[in-house]
Amino acid sequence: LRRYTDLGREVECWSFLHPKNHNESSSKIDSSSPPTWVPWSLHILAAEALQYTTEDSSKQCLDELYALRTIFLETSNNPYILAVDASLSNVFQRIKDWRMALDSLENLLQILPSVYSGDELFAYQAEIWSRQGRILLQVGAIQQAEQIFQRMEEEEISTENQDWMILKIPIQVALHKGMIQFASQKYDKAISHLRTASKLLRSCQQKEYYYQMDNYVGPIVWRESPQLLSTQVWNNMSLCSLYLCRMNDAIATMEDLVREDPTAYLTERLAFNLCTLYELGADTASSARKKRVLQLVAKRFYLHDIGPEQFRVN
Image (cartoon, rainbow, N blue to C red; front, top):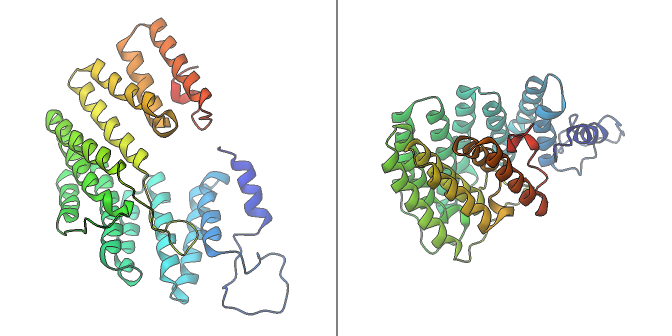
């Protein structure tokens, strides 16, 4: 909802940024510290929220996260060290400090074996390799990204496991192959891999999968929903069509997603890209009409998180 002011007030009200070690016992009541029953995950969330609620956002946010990491290192609380490293990676990616983002992800890979094992460990590792590879693609390191992505193909996974984190690995493999071809400007090959990813995703959505819940509040490592992953696949496919001068195909691909399920697929990114294509492929009046229709769809399904700027309107 982007209510960053209210978020900042809640953080300040509960003094989330002044936690004590939960293992410390004290008979004194300290009004500057939150109750010890407040879970560490909320402290981590509050620290990460500083990137939106303070003026010197990134510096204070990183300082608080590293302070929490120090507390968890002292108590060997590896699950929460994972959570902090995941948050650090998010913050570094937001400020485009790619080297530190990769370093935080590498820390995650080193600690994961102490918390998880078997298919679940590989699933989390695959998700982190995916993040690392995408960062490398963003800075133009295509060969290094491809090497990272190939790690996901080196281990066989159980076909009987119905956890979404496991089921989505073959989909991610096909998506990554498409992204590599896209970055190499081989758009026809990219579309072929993306179509494979789409077919796998459709077949997966027909299964009764489940989410493995952690014992800690919130996931330790990101969990992309099937809808979000589907949006990425189709969005990239549309961009390939655009680069191949197939404007109508690109528009039709995105519009089909919106028709299928607006609440799942009409995201900020898709709305912005679709409206950009409307501007490129039609005159001003026609483009404006189509963008208004898309806005009405978002309003009808209460998608208030998509602002006017995403529809490219003044």
